[in-house]
Length: 203
Image 1 (tube, helix red, strand yellow):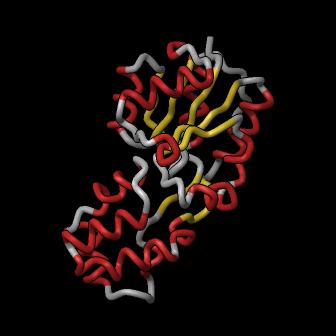
Image 2: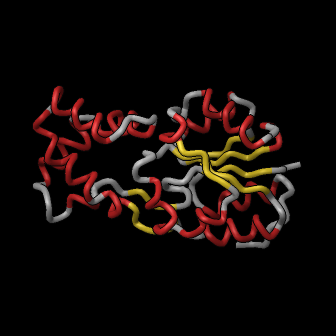
């Protein structure tokens, strides 16, 4: 029996497109250097794990100051990275609520920008609660955040579906005992849940 569904947020409920804030504000080669050559994703993971943007900026100033203009644009215009709801997910959330399934979120997200999530994808506000990595100082795929998730919300991992668009995070959740699924589309997740006996209508 599936007792709860835990959803990642970025690119599961809300589209996250980190290139969007730079359009018309920074030269394409500078954007590419920041997002790929510099390894922005690793830098951003530290933010998700609780580092403040002020501390992150100081670290960047010490290690790669040429990327400070890009970081400043990204932080100042972070809201523009949120490109709206992932298609089909709000209806899925509403159908799960109607079916009486507990719904929670587990997201890697900076505590300083998380308040922008729900306005971009209102379905986030329909969840019972969201465990935000930046607020607890732990980020997926750290196994401790999955242990905290289960403890905080009284979840039995085996009876909880966890859906994330990151294969690494899905593997970590499975290792922690969750019924972990790689998210591709809302319809595919709906089908997986139906196959597990969750009474959902067709998409």
